[in-house]
Amino acid sequence: MIYKKYHTALVFTLVLQHLLKDTKLEEKAFNLYADILEQEKVPKHQIKSANLYSKRIIRAFEKGQISQPSPFTSWQKVRQVIKKGIAKMVGYFSS
Image (cartoon, rainbow, N blue to C red):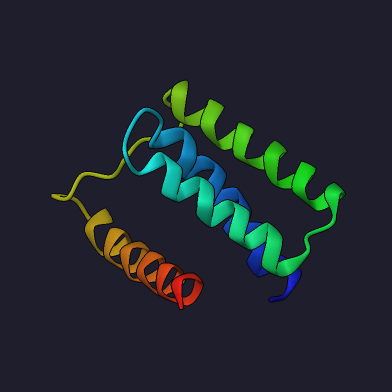
């Protein structure tokens, strides 16, 4: 996998872990993160970079700068695209 793809996947899984904290899915998100690190042999400086980006996203989400889209707005199409992308990513990593 090229840098851009696995870096995005690392940031995504770190944010996902935070959002799923104290749920049954938190462990699965962590396992996905660990699988990416193991399979791609990610350098430490890129792991640090992914951690930094995920912390920025989480902070912005907590401060209300990023909000979840409502299914009754034009964001519904965006959510569907994201959902399909996540399904593809999960399918790729689980096979």
